[in-house]
Length: 410
Image 1 (cartoon, rainbow, N blue to C red):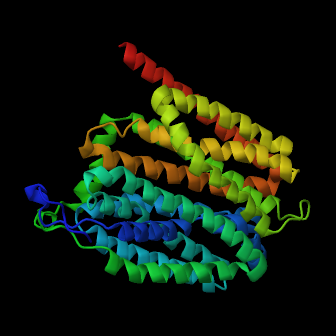
Image 2 (cartoon, rainbow, N blue to C red; image 1 turned 90 degrees about the horizontal axis):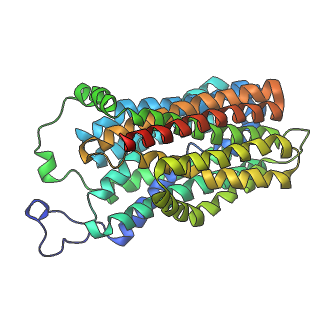
Image 3 (cartoon, helix red, strand yellow; image 1 turned 60 degrees about the vertical axis):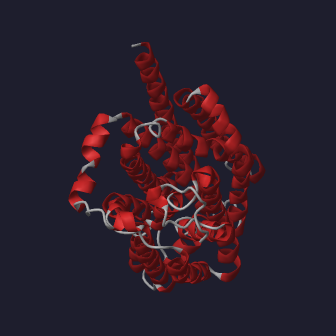
């Protein structure tokens, strides 16, 4: 780490800042630890076929993974206020590694499900790394550092979905998890060398009671109820995303369509557009206002979801709704966060915890719902499910916009 510049405030005199190389390595770590939840998307049909399970049964894999992730965030993330981010990041990275190893070598379906569920429960490191980095960069570099880590997350999701499709199709789905476990082993060994422990001033602070930290969410959320609305909207948006891509993994590889898992992965590459469009759309949301922008985006999403049923049997026409969904999906999340990240700094982390928990609960429920509906209603059934979810999202986004307008007039 680089030494602090002269004139550093007294409370930060002994702090060392991250170098550019260390920040890039943290972004690489963020990519690897985030990617683990997304390998299943393009290879879901291959895994189901190998274990001889139905679409609704294989849907339990991503569903329980996401719900366990929500539980892990709620129960484990508050430990960040009692223990160092470094210590927790290493422990949870090792937990992810254990889950991946179980998945890679599982010979029974329910062992695979258990490994995936434990993997989800252990996926806390992606939420610790930004907090760690924010304390170890100069204030003038905070925006750039955050953007670097976010780029790592996006790259991890992209590589996971595209790479898993190709590897699964040509080398088998287990090879995907062999590679994932190898990458996690490297990251787990790298983190102790890359991250420092808690600052001296923080280490000397009296530890807070764990249960008090967890249950302090209740009064904070009660005082800021809009986070429940934004979290529910994001849960619906994330559920639509997972429903579409899990169903695509089953639909495109079905006898009716006849494509391989690699094709599903190639389609995921359209998320590269987000790297160029999301910053511009974020600036537009700043000018338009978070709630009004979210409502407009929800209408675009509703139109895109409506096209899924019409274009679902032509790969090239499917690109139209998929591109639209990839453009607006991240903006549902960004505008949702904008509605509460201007609250006092002392409550933002807990508001974000409530928001993320609702997001993953919605994603978990939709993951199983989409695969169950696909088993019984095919692609058109999934299209109708996502259209219903999108309609609910539009209604809630409109309600949020109206409530904001009434509050402004009061």
